Amino acid sequence: MHTRKNQRALTGAEKKRFVGAVLALKRRGEYDEFVRVHARYYVSDMEDGVRAGHMAPSFLPWHRYFLLEFERALQRVDPGVSVPYWDWTADRTPAAALWGEDFLGGTGRSGDQQVMTGPFAYRNGDWTIQGKVTVGKYLTRDLGRPSDPVALPTGSELAWATNETVYDAPPWDSTVTTGLRNRLEGWMSDGGERNHNRVHRWVGGHMLGADSPNDPVFWLHHAFVDLLWDRWQRKHPAAAYLPKTVLGPGDPQRGRVLSLEEPMPPWNVTPSSILDHRSLYRYDA
Image (tube, rainbow, N blue to C red; front, side):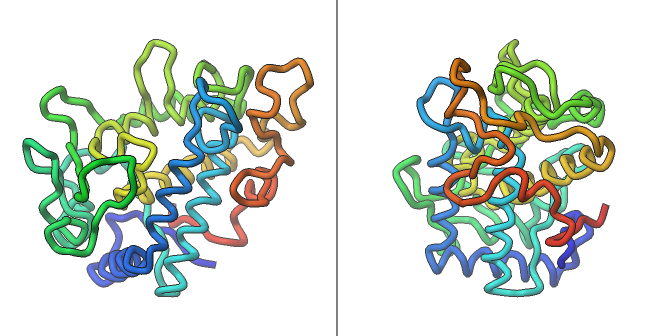
């Protein structure tokens, strides 16, 4: 069992090993497959098909397993590597250590938002964006969106989500106003975005789209989201994943929303099987 650490606690050597393993997956072509999987299962309320990755109860277990699969791939390169997490309620500015030259690199330049610093800058020759989702070959960011500023979520905004005592509620989509899942995922009926979604918006660039794993900060962001779910599970041990059973024949969400024992594509893994991660990894917080 391994430990996921706060990125601010990483040593220089740990940062170097994490970056090295990520770049190795990129060279092998494995990294881009993770990007494609995420894009494939980003299905909105308005689209047909199973909503496994987003806007549905399986948002948290789907990303927990997705993150674990990525971490296992990293560990095939370097068994001592784990995915760190980014507490965006604490490290809230483009000057935070994770955006340093020795780790993820900084924001994009004005004009085209191309990231010019750090190991994932296109000009270094190790990080070329693949696929048809975006046109450019370079990683883009627009930290804080200076032209129309957006702030990272605060502790109180996060508490608004984690103080919920139920996991999710009908109609099990982006319009739900109660429950941990959608309040943490961040779809709001007033058109605003909270928590998880706001972080994607704050980073900008590739983090805005279905191919958001093109930016390696995706993994640190989702490791923190997973940690938040972990804390919530420990605080509310009786609060079960919902829906518990397959939705009825008359429910418009039947076949589109995954219940506790239905496999999450593209894996034969059910939400129930990934609710407890304690035999697989732990967090340092």
